[in-house]
Length: 85
Image 1 (cartoon, rainbow, N blue to C red):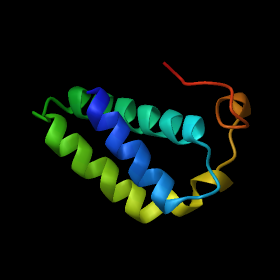
Image 2 (tube, rainbow, N blue to C red; image 1 turned 90 degrees about the vertical axis):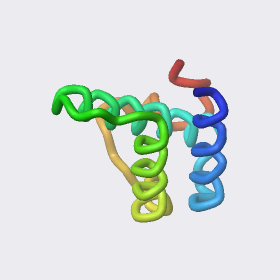
Image 3 (cartoon, rainbow, N blue to C red; image 1 turned 60 degrees about the vertical axis):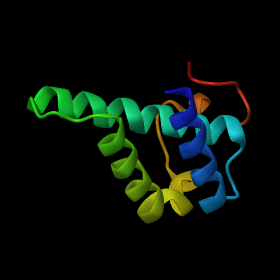
């Protein structure tokens, strides 16, 4: 799992140079958790390969704009406040 998070974090950093490493990793952890939770609720079998493929698609489509995302929990994504987990 750690290797997967690292690969996806690096993919996001290649796509978006406005994010710090900690911000990119937080985004990846949130995207992975969100997709896995949604898939678990649907009752469909997922797996790490499917999850990684979907998150890579999201990075390709939205990764360059993630630094523009506004949220009520700005402290998660502003500055280098460490990792989510």
